[in-house]
Length: 162
Image 1: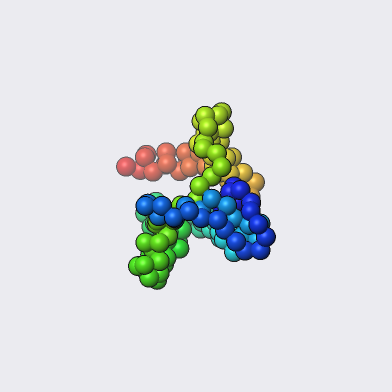
Image 2: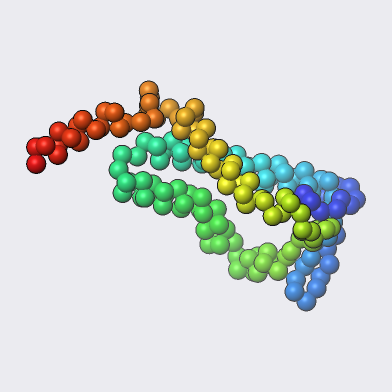
């Protein structure tokens, strides 16, 4: 919606009805601001809070099985908004929403950014993991990033007992 052409004042939109459904072509600045305040900013805040708490929660997990269960629980929390939308909204509104599409001014033309967007997201994810593990996390206090020095003598003593 934010990338659509701006038209008029107030809360208005220009749409065309086709055989496939409704195509929104223009929206007013008021609709764009309302969309930012009511949709985009809350979703961003919820996503960032879930990122922070999810990393903290998974870092505090003690076993591999619990990590899998906690990851599934986080997936449920992330998908909860879609689940609620599909179960609470009337069937007619779901059909209308599926038939409504937003028409952008320009199609995605071939560009370097379009080809490298996934790589950028991957690098951003790796950077977040590095930043969280080495600088932000507060679950493992005084974590020295390698337990090999402590564990090797212990594991050797276990092996010699057998």
